[in-house]
Image (cartoon, rainbow, N blue to C red; front, top):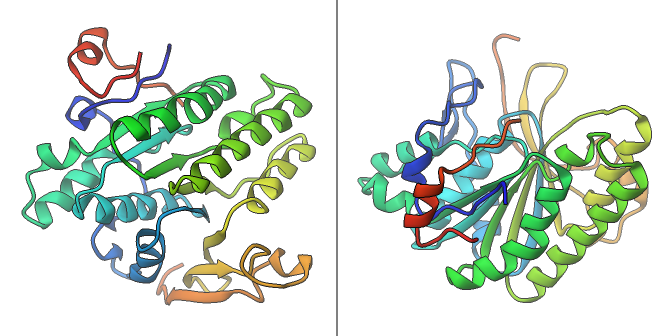
Length: 275
């Protein structure tokens, strides 16, 4: 296989950090103009097992997802990650651990990562490997980065991509029914051909909560909980543009994939590696 779950994130310290705005994983986004706290969404995700949350929007959504994962790990939970867009950042987790006086090496032993190049690899990682692996590490929490990124690639026809997505969504529902909480993080994209944008619509309609992270026309950074059919009785049109959404966080601004493969010798000595 060309992807692995890893037993210890020390082996991927050579991943280069993403070039985004400075992000403090403990308190949120922080630069001269922005500071966002995300305690409400963290509590909502970690308090009760068995849920599917979608975070999408600005690139910082991946760092916010890692923040949520870090708090779960700090409580002693292990987490499995499937990364379909090469956005995992081990350095952010290490900084979080040091800030809380936790041994980074021991902290990173609680997170396991799988990466893939293609939609077929991502499908296999999610539908076949992930459920059994969560059982093996006695975890009920998984983080999925860029679940749609490889499906936007025309290596698979639109019909085939729709079928793959449906199988992935079915796997999500089965895991949720067994008490697994899934956090999905996606960039907001418009792709060609435009018919493939329907994949994102389908994804949004099959999760419990949808959060959007964006910047408005005035340069304010906002995190919205969108009204959603699985939680509220609302009309379909309410999801369209966020005007009927709850603005959880808003802060004024003053100014406006490649697979990382684990070497065979590393995979063999890590107890968490799935063959």
